[in-house]
Image (tube, rainbow, N blue to C red; front, side, top):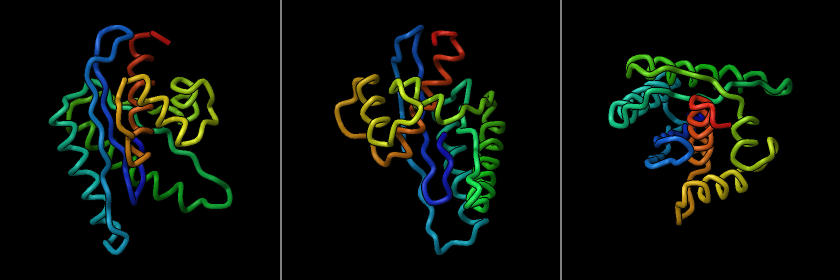
Length: 155
């Protein structure tokens, strides 16, 4: 999961060994005119719906970091991450937090890859023909792939 208040990326992968056989992705959008509690409730309920449908064993959430110049962003992302963690718990899934740099490095070879590079790499690894949009969705798939490979010690 790629937490964001305006858009949260969701993605799941499953398979056997190195081969990913199934994947699903999407994004949960919220309206900036809504109250914070309404936005968090939407993220929670849509995440829970997605997890109930996909039934993952493991939910990977981007490890939140803050930028000194924008500490408020880290606080908001922490709130979004919190509702995702609760949804994962309600769905009965284990949760792991992975740094975005680790996921980027895994799928692109560079921890500093930009969103376009991550999206192209994820698409190529999954043999997905169309662009994966929004970028939050491809970021979520990169995180899911990192968790998948890590849990099977394939890295």
